[in-house]
Length: 272
Length: 264
Image 1 (cartoon, each protein chain N blue to C red):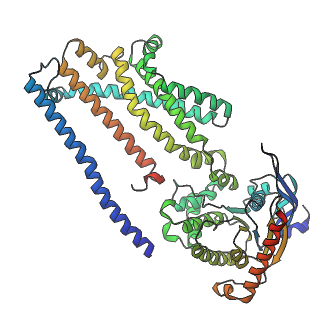
Image 2 (cartoon, rainbow over the protein chains, first blue to last red):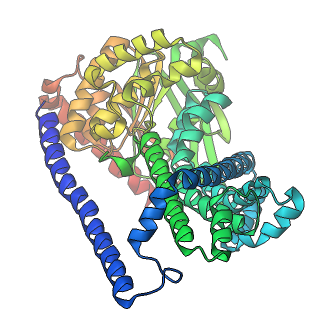
Image 3 (cartoon, chains in turn brown, orange):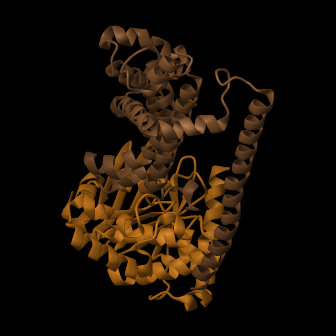
């Protein structure tokens, strides 16, 4: 099998260049980040800026380490709220898209609304949510669902609307509804759902934290940031912001890993 | 259906198909009469847009004829489809990219409710038949176009159909690969003795494979000539060197030129 061999050779060279590429992808931003922190640290010290206005990175870091247990708890609660919201919003949106994808006018109508909703600042609805659900964690979850659902609907609807020669294939082998769904329709929609999640999941963290600024459970990142900022505990605020960033990165990595796993067959991910 | 039609693997009588669209109606097929005996290999050749794919889609129950009658093994295409009497090979390999080669081949068996072990075994046999036994765990993108189309043939054969409907299956392949797959198809057909309807616009391919060639003209699509191919079986690389092979190629080319003259 000479073709297989030559394939393997190109694969090897590919992974080599990829390794170089990955190193660059990691190294360059790290250097930038270190440089940025150094300038920040030096600037604050040289200018003698008050901690109240802008603490140094080292102060923030030591606070972050000191309060790590507390911050982790807060991040966990915020993460759970966001996760529940994504789950509920996605299930509703995907089921709805699945139900209406055969009905053109209904699908089109809902698509126009979901596209518009995506552009609107839905977080502004939070006070309304508290009317429905009280100033509770539930209101935050509901807010996230509302924010996420239009995105997921748009993507899922695009995924379901796809037709291909595969539909002819399914008909020619007399596939029943269930096989058609599990073997064709759902896998075909999956790249779109994953693309939706890549947008929706980081957004869910943002919506959770901003909603928490206005109320909900006390033991969350947003509530903590707001409380500490009114007490002028700037260092605590910053350490919570660091934790929020960590949470954001973590969920993004999690979605990317899921994406790689589910779409390992996908043509755009051949290199993996 | 009369008892006589049982002898035909494929049969169309006065078949017509009209597509309506905003730009006006298109008569894709008109008065098409076609008979393929069981175990026969019929190629349909004609210019692009002559309705040859529509004809194949009518046999595979993907298109409803407007007029006329059509049967597969003496049954309506819908009945034949439900009874899994035919397999379809499409222009593109049409493999599901998220399934491995093996699971692509097992798909029709899965639909039939065959248990996992049996269907894996059958699929593996089919992959042996098309020479891809060691690629069962690969994903389609890891295979060349020719290999993918072989997987598609294995999938179409997995339910052991007595009729194979092939819609320009090798049209997108380079000539060397196409020649090799033609040989392979002859070998497989020799083993299975299935009825094959084969759409192509390659003259040499049609002559090499078929026992009979139907030449079509376009607008409206109809059959203008039937050419018997009396080349000896089994067909192999030497077949292409026979003087009769060249005579037939010339004859089919002449028929095609005449068919397109009808359109112009």
